[in-house]
Image (cartoon, rainbow, N blue to C red):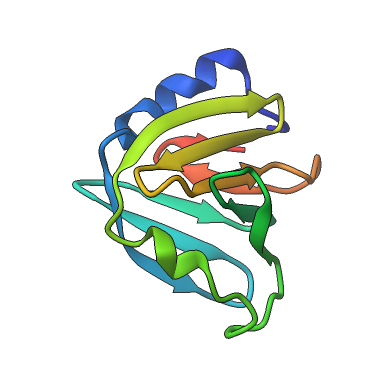
Length: 119
């Protein structure tokens, strides 16, 4: 599937009030594990934004470990909002004013998954 439908926000709402307890980095994905449940697995592209909306860190497929530095700032911080911000991305806003934007930028392959939602 390519892009997010407006109804796909239902697959993401349960992340509100959850906290990222672990960030796992591999050659082909980055995974954000949440408490009390679920996982966001990104295979293509995600961005970390500061409170002003500026991009402060990026992960893309084949990003070398250690190349990104600011993602740990969202560990153990509650998600305060879940927004389907474009037809190809969603944003998790955190209590510390940081945001994680997960982007579907590949129409041929899976870009990310959240629970039973594969985009």
